[in-house]
Every structure is written in structure tokens, then in C-alpha cells.
Length: 363
Ligand code: DOR
Ligand code: ZN
Image (cartoon, rainbow, N blue to C red; front, top):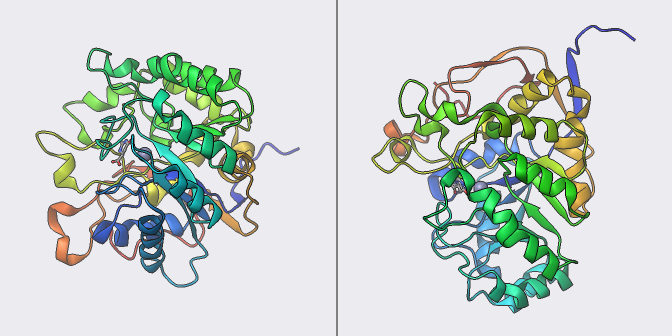
């Protein structure tokens, strides 16, 4: 076998199992970026107001499709937003009509547009039982919200305090622990049964918490769950590249316009969709695991969700790509409404054959 580095990597088209496509002008700008690469994406429901009905979710799905170029071949997989008063019958109908793929649990006030989230997980048991019986997976933002728990410990505390009892109460429920950030979460998933999986973002694979304070306060690296110390980043890299089928790709690309990030109370969220696959490929190569990228990006997700894998290919080339320092939105909302992508101003060693399709919105 030759040791020559791989120059061209063909993968089945990947899926993004966790993304924020937003609405309005942001949706117009970011949805095509996701659809240019990914075949499907699990779309987060934390709009304002949140998506709690089949009708609202279906209407949002239509707006997403309308924001895409023709023949994008992209399928948005829709989620409902769980609240203390969510109507379980609505979820059941959504599943039966094929509108809903999963439901999202935000602990109340955990993150952006999570004010209407769930305050009492035990009280949600009847709703989770309905989800279990109609095969709707539960997607969890796994952080406690108590002000007295250190923000860097909120995920680890959530695992023992809430997730372990929930899995015991609902052994038949499929659960995805979204955007894991800690060695504790990696270990928790590995030690759990086949009904628990986790998604991992590119930013949590690339960055540790020093990035937040590197030479000054860096709002572009602020997201929730917040990036953690180096040992956690290394545990996430080991998990993602391990070939374990219950860790898979979920970008958590969460765009906020620049002025909303660079403010006295900057929004949480890292925008990574334009170069997400190139970003993951960089990590997999650094870990000597390029041969496992396809499993992580394109196979393990559909396997867990019980969906077919995509057939069409996406090709990565060993040709460096310069990530623009910002992407401008439509003229009408330009200026400070620009988005700053992950790796802004940096060079990544892999690029996509066919190039970035961002409608010329780069600078
Ligand atoms: O950083 C984040 N941004 N984490 C989330 O959970 C939500 C997201 C957003 O919607 O901006
Ligand atoms: Zn998210």
C-alpha cells in the first residue's frame, strides 16, 4: 500500500444532524450554504416564536425550500420545540403526516430563544411516552440552567442530574445528545445503550476555551454549550474519529449578524455552514482518520435515525481554500449584518470540488 497522501476524497453526500437555518433574510442567506453540501439537515425549531405546531413547522419547511435554488436535492428534516404545555397529540399528528422527524428539548433559558423551553423534565414524561410510541427521537440541549452551577460544568451536571434518570424512565426513546462538549459526555454516550447518540460540531473539535480570550474577548467563538478546556477537545476528537457509530456530524451552525455578536451582550452561536465539511476533514486528517470521515459525516447519522444513506457523492480535494473574513447578506441588510464564519481569514487544506456556492456573498 502506498503512503502517498490522499489527494481526492469521494464521500456519499453527508447530512447535517443539527443546524439553525433561521428565518427571513438570514434564511435566504444561509439555507443555500447548507443545501450546497448536505443532502438533509435536522433543522432547529428555536425561531421566534418557537415551532410548536404542525402547521407552523410545515410553513417553515416551505420557506426553507423556497430559499433554495432549484434542484438542490436538499431535504429539511423538521423538528418541534418542546414546551411545558406542548400538545402531545400535535406531535403524534406531525409524525404521522411525515412533517416531524424529531422533537427538540431546550431546558428553559438554556440558550438563544429557549425562554419557552421546558422547566420540569419529569412533568414532560407523558409527552415523551407519546414520542416513544410514535418513534420520534428526542434531541437534547444538555445543560442545566441553574445560575449556581459553573457554566463550564453545566453539561456534565446535566448528564447525571437529568439525562440518566430520563433514559431510565424512557428506555424505548431514541435520544440524541446534541453538540457534546465534554469528556464526560463522550464517556456517557459510550457507556449507554443503542438508543443514545451524540452530535459533534466542527468548532468543538478545533477550539478550546483559550480561543474565547485570545488577545481579547472573541465573540465569534462564543456558543452554547461553551467551548471547554483542551482535555475535552481531545476527547471529542478521539470520539468523532473513533469509528463509533453513535457519534456523528451535527454542525450546530448558528448564524447571528455581526452586530448581534459584537455587542455588550453578544449572542451565542458559531456560524460554520459554508466550510463545515472542509473543517471536519481537516480534523480527521490531523487525527490520521480520513478513512473514517464518511462514516461520521454520511453513514452513522442515517443509521441512527433509521433513514437511507444518500447515494450521490461529494468530492473533497487537497486544494487549500481561503475562508473569507465575512459573508455579506443581501444588500438591503448589508453592513454590520455581515456574518463571520468559523475559520474566518484562515486557510483550510481541503476544498470541495465545484467550489463554495455562496452566491458571491464573500469578501
Ligand atoms: O450557541 C448556540 N446558538 N447554542 C444554541 O444552543 C442555540 C444557538 C442559536 O440558536 O443561536
Ligand atoms: Zn443548536
